[in-house]
Image (cartoon, rainbow over all chains, first blue to last red; front, top):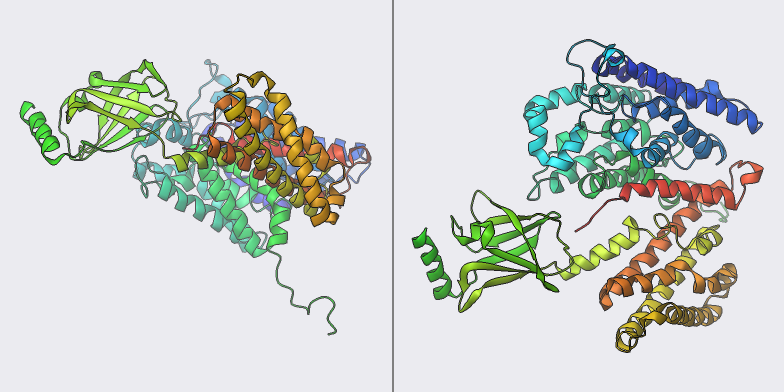
Length: 317
Length: 305
C-alpha cells in the first residue's frame, strides 16, 4: 500500500509548482481527515485500528487529487466521512466496500456542494510564485478545464484558450493546465502507474482496455459534425482518464480479479466515460464511469470465472 | 443572384426534384438542412425568410437567429433562440421559394425508431426508476437478497409491466379519453395492474412453484408497486402512442431487472462481510442503494438523441 502512496507523490510535488503551495495544504487536510475518520470508526466499532497499513492515506490522497486545487478546507472531512465511514466501514471494513471510497466521496461532494466543487479550478501559475494563493487580493481566480471548454464551446473554444493542438499536447502531457491536483500531469501519473505495473502490483488489462476504449470511441463519435473526426489524444490527456485508469480502476477491492473480467471492466468504464463526456450533463465522466462499473464487479467475477483446471466436482478422479 | 435563383427554379421545375435532400435536428436549438445541390445564395440563406412552427402549435412561430452554411454549400444549420422540442414534428416554410405550385414547405421530424430507442434507454438507465427516482423500493429491497430470486422477480415484473401498460393504454385511449373519464385514471390503472398481477400469480403458481415460493408476499405486492402505477400515469400525462408506451414499460421493467440483479449480487457479497450488528440486513441495503444513487447521478443531465 505504501508503494502505491509513493507512486502518487510525484504529481503532488509537481502540483505545488503548477498551482501553488496550497495544494499541499488541501492534500494534508484530506489525508489527515481520512486517517482520523478511519481511526475513530475502528475504535467505535471495536475493531483493530489499521491506520498504519496505508489504505486510508491512499484514499485521502486520491480524494485530494480529484477535487479542485483551491477547494475550501471543510470539504475534505465531509468527503472522508462519506468515503471511509459510510462507504467502507459500515459495509464491513477494508476489503468489503462495493464502491471506491475516494470516488464515492467525490460524487457525494459533487451532489451536495456543486458550486464549491466546480468553481474552484485554477489556471496554472505563469511564474514560480507558489505562495501567491495566500497573498492574493482578489477572492478567487477560476479557469475552465479543457474538457469543460470542449463540452460547452467545442474545439474552437479550446484552441482559443490553449493554442493549437500540437502546442497544447505537450503542456497537457506535462501537466500545465487547469484541473484537479493529481490529474493534470499525465506523464507523472503514467510513470507511477507503469512502475506499479513493473512491480506487479497491477496488471495491464484494465488501463489498456479503458484508455483504448476512450481513445477509440472519442475518435469515432467525438467529432463536431461527422464520424471519425474526434481527437483521441486529447481525450486521453485531458481530464482524469490517466489517474482513473492506473489508480482507481485497478483497485483490488472494487474491481474484478480475473483477466477477462478486467478487460470487460476497462471497456465498460471507457464506454461510459465517453458517453458521459459527449452526451451527459458533466464535462468529465471518468469518476462516475468507474463508480457505475464498481457494483458490476461481483457479477463480472461470476460471469468470467476462470476455467477450472481440476476435474469437475463430483467426478471420480 | 437572380440568375442563380431562376436557374434553381428551372432545375426544380424541370427535374421535378425537391431542393431539400434531407432534414434533421441538430443540437438542442438547431435544425440541419441538406440541399440536393450546392447553394451559393438565395432566400434559403436569409433567416427572415423562414417560417417555423411545431405541427401541433401553428400559432407559435419559432424565430431563426442564424444560418451557418458548410464550406461545400450543401448543408445549412439553422439556429433558434430557444431549444426546440425535438419530439414534435416541425414545419418549415420558406418565403419566396416555391416547389411546383405551392410554396416550399417541408417537415422536420425525428426518426421514429431512434425516438423509441431514446425512450427505452432513458427509462432503462438515465432515469432508472429505482436509482434516480427512488420508486418501487419495497419489492426492490424484499427480493434482492438472492440473485436467482432477483432475476425471476425482474422478469416477472417486466412482464406485468408490459401487460398492464398495454391494457392501460388501450383503455385510456379508447375509453377514458373519449368519455372524459380521465379523472378516474388512478383507480382504473390500479385495477388493471392487479388484474395482470393476478394472472401472473396463477400462471407462476403452476409453472414455477419454487420461484413462486421464493417471491412470497412480494408477488402480490407488485400490485401496489409505485413503478407499475407510475408508468401508465406517465404515458397518460405525456400523451404517448402505443409503441412509445410499450418502450417506456419495457425500459422501466428492464431497468428494474438491472437494478435488482446488481443489488442482489452486491448483497450476496455483503452477506460475507462483518457489517456492524445494528446495520445488518435492510439498513446496509439502504446504504448501498444510496451509493448506487450517487453513482447514477453521473447520468444526470444526459440527453440522448
